Length: 376
Ligand SMILES: C[S@@+](CC[C@H](N)C(=O)[O-])C[C@H]1O[C@@H](n2cnc3c(N)ncnc32)[C@H](O)[C@@H]1O
Image (tube, rainbow, N blue to C red):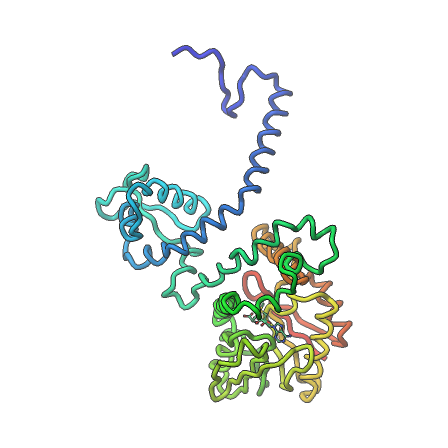
């Protein structure tokens, strides 16, 4: 075959002069970046599809790496969709959710996979149902109720509604959640699995809870975190304060009780209050109101009481790129859904001072969240 053009190692025809070539390279890189960002949501959707099909469990339960034909057979999908499954898995291998290795037996990869087979990676291990720290319920946060408001974010910027969520549904997220029991239970399950991860932290953070005989988990959901605390510190009386609908049917234990109420009205008195992922869902003004109620609640312990916050602290200078990116994604989510925000140290400090607290200590214990102790 005779070729009449020559392609350089960078993939650009050598017929271009160097200046034109540089310009074209830059333009095509920009196009790749643009399209990649545009279709980034397909990573989320592919991940959700894998979780809905139970692929992490299939790989986990298989006991050895799973070849494509084995996966297709376990999923009971028609053989004509084998190559589509190969493409879904290729995407998820590329994004780090699965990895490939040599197949242990002669199962054959099929669909272009050769003798390769799929294994779990640390992120997909977190989607295995057998795992005490299974995070698959958290994927419900990408269900249509949360995604719809994004389609009108531009309109929201020009309008006057407090959130794009409110603009889409005509009511604030917490009201919508209360009126939609199915969404409410999905949301509570998402939060509960997220809090279950705290079992790694609480047991290693005993000094933080030293000297405390009672604690209230404000907005504590279905009590995942409070249960971990009550089991780690059996002498401590733990209370979960929540919206009545969330806790009305829940039963406590000897040192764990559920109280229906409104944190803006009253927080039961205790040596300490703990709030995980509460403040990031509210405006500065509302956070100050909640903090003042927290201060009242711990007042009987005098200077010995404290507020313990588990939440995001933005630190773009110190954090790695991926960590900051995930924190910024949560920040956008809070803006769209709840008029809340993720805060920098300076922003947290302003809230504490305005609510009348005198000092605080931030400990970056784990991944996305920090632990902040705030003192009267
Ligand atoms: C983002 S979730 C966090 C749940 C839990 N702290 C966790 O991290 O798993 C916020 C919680 O605050 C509760 N909440 C919202 N408004 C409240 C209010 N006015 N009083 C008490 N709880 C409230 C919600 O029902 C929800 O469970």
